[in-house]
Image 1 (cartoon, helix red, strand yellow):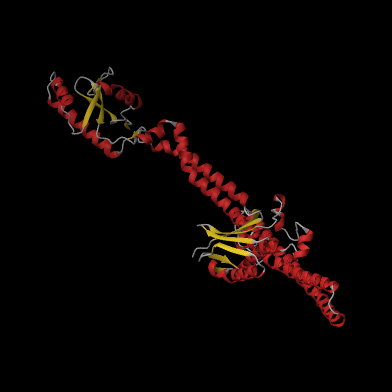
Image 2 (cartoon, helix red, strand yellow; image 1 turned 90 degrees about the horizontal axis):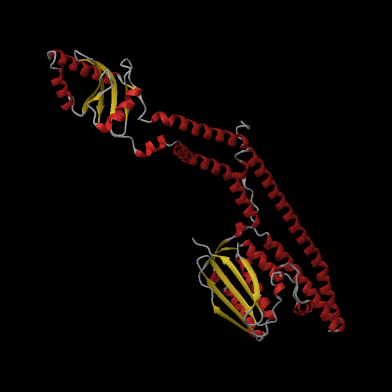
Length: 456
């Protein structure tokens, strides 16, 4: 059974089955040609013998020398409606056939000239059967029965039989559905495997039991693929646990450091050194939080996704951003607000992603930040621009990588850790969207975020 379920065996069996069907079609189709020479049925032989007996009886009633009158009567007026008799004398002369049919009659005579085994054959416009013999008192004639009211075989079918190359082409055309089915059935497991691999690239690390069925080769590949996913999940889980443990261990001495600085300030008062230590401790705490966020969003479980409305998803965050911009003396202008567009995703992570972009713009802008929301049938586009210093063109892609900072001194002064836009990139990738940066028309940075729309 394992051998029968092998992909190699399937391909071999279906190939030879298709080849056998093609060969059978090529060999059997010519036998279906109704124009082939065939033997008469018993009923047709009986019918012809009755006609022969009637003619011989008529000749016996005419006196010798009067057969010519009977011949004229037979040839001018057919004895049987819709049929006519064709006679061939011992010298090979043909009587009873129009001039344009003589060649056809001669062809049939060359194929069937034995009265012991009469035949029949269909031509373009008529059917001929015979021969039978008759004696008129002087000579023995061969009789053939012709019938015009025969429906000829379709011209298309005649073309198949008359032209072997066209017949071969038609046979190949008939076999095409079987070959397409073969290709589809063989490619189906590969398509499942590709779909599962695409899901993994999007962060969906679910096991796919359907990959472990079908041909042996694909089944083994499916088992290995699922084992790979299990290994990835274990590795990612271990990595997240390591980051979580490290952050927990780092928070303990960090808390002690903050407590120590508070005690020193109480005893000795405030100083620039203490402020520097507190700033660095706060920066370290932010970095730990961001590291945990990157780890969580990069391998976010898509089962937590739900249908969200854009207008309610970012409402509170935008209100907070407007308040903060006003507090620091900057202008934040929302050109077009989000509407009730639907998104399938995680509310917390999507809110955090846009907040990181806006906070980045607030941090580095000189005076103004412009936010635009728009949507089409495919997705939602969010554009955040500022009038700050911006970044070099070669660094527009690098700013979304973890810990990348374009200006070390500026990041230290602003408290940046180089992880904010990396969080954005991870979240957007989890939601099958994309994000990129470019130079703004206001002189600063322009960040474009796109997310696919959801339709119920």
